[in-house]
Structures are given as C-alpha cells and as structure tokens.
Image 1 (tube, helix red, strand yellow):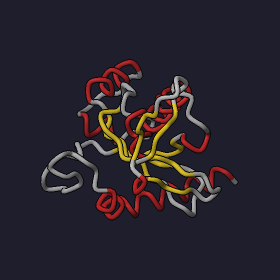
Image 2: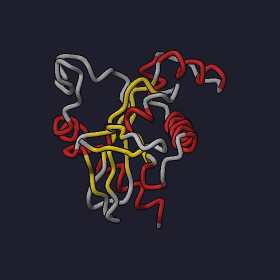
Image 3: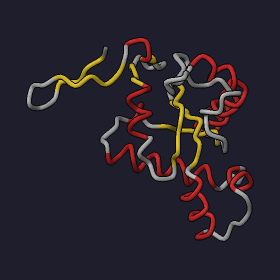
Amino acid sequence: DIGEILSNGAVKIIDRKKNLIKLSQGEYVAVEYLEKIYGITPIVEDLWIHGDSFKSQLVAVVVPNEENTKKWAEQNGYTGSFQKLCSLSQLKPHILLELKSTAERNKLRGFEQIRGVIIEPELFESPEKELVTATLKKRRDRFLKRYKAEINTLYQKLAEAKS
C-alpha cells in the first residue's frame, strides 16, 4: 500500500503500489487516488486515467454525467441526444476546464493534472465491455487495450499543441 502522512501524524492509505505510474520526468503518479479526486467533478460520471512512462502528461477516458452535460449543452445552445452531445468537440475543453478546477481545489501538482480527454458516452460497468471486475475495480490492461489507438492520437495532438 501507498500512504500519505497527515499533519496530525496519522497515515492515510491512498493507493496500491501496482497502480503507480512513472511519467517520463520521473514522477510517480497514484492513478486510483487521482481517479477518486477527479471523480467528484460534477461533469464526470466516471473516468479512467492513463499515464505512460514515455510521456510527461496524463490523459483520461471520461464518461460525462448525463444530467450535467445536458445542462451545459442547454446553456451553450446545443441540442440532441446524450450520445450526440458527447461527440461535440466543444465538450472536451469544458470537461478539461472542470477537471483543472477540481485539481486546483485539491492542490494537485502540475504532473497530476489531466491534459487530454477521450469522451465515452457509455458507462464502464456494462458486462460486455469487461472493463471492470465484479467488485467494480478497473482492469487497467483492458482499458489500455480498448482505448490504445485513441490514446496514441490524443498524445500526438498534445505533442503538436506543445510545439
């Protein structure tokens, strides 16, 4: 287990060692811990965070909260089904802004901030996807296999935006 020493001297368990990801700059990231923090973002229903030891940034697959997504769409003049709203290119920057706000409120460091998102309209729990266990733990290897191409494209876009 990975712990954090609190100001009163107590130890708080925040993650498991096998769920640590080392980024290219040498920083270790506890992804399950970050998923819990980012999971409180109102626009987010569920998310899976990915980091790569050859990259310096985190990305995530986000299932938006349907009710809050529809509110956002209404306020910004967009209409359509939830599926259609999830395909809007304007939704990604909004979700990233909300995630950044959550990161700042929780005093996350720069390398712990999500820099890119892939929007998934369907919940991860569906049995045919086999992305989570019976106890709803994320199967990280299956997520990576399922979203590998989209993740590579996203990292490519992030690299182009940097240069």
